[in-house]
Length: 194
Image (cartoon, rainbow, N blue to C red):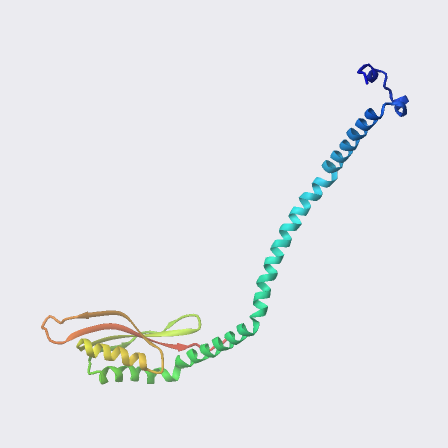
């Protein structure tokens, strides 16, 4: 085959072209059609496929999380039931309005039983929170470390919640027993009154 033969080629006599040239033109046209098809159609589909695969992975992760929860649903329900019971028990440890006076007596009795001498036992104004109210009590007592420990331990053993805050232990100028200054806080449940 001679390069001069290429000059004699025309589309009018394409059927008479040599087989090699027909094959070469066919391959070029087929490649062009495939390339144009990819560029104008398939490329966008690959991009869309990538996005859909990402969504599939996200959905699969979400499915696995939900399946893990569904598998443990009975355990979650049991845990929720235990939490509700525990919350109810804690609420029962918060006195209602009528029990606060008795609780104040219990706090002072606990101090006396520990051998402490009260200098000050002064209930403060009630401080309202979300679903409970705090009743702070300023206390000043005289005693020794062991009596202070017994007092705090006795407060922890009460059937109601009592916490101790802002503890200061000092020695009076004239010597003698130690002085404990603190704020004891008791709590009461606020009734849901719309």
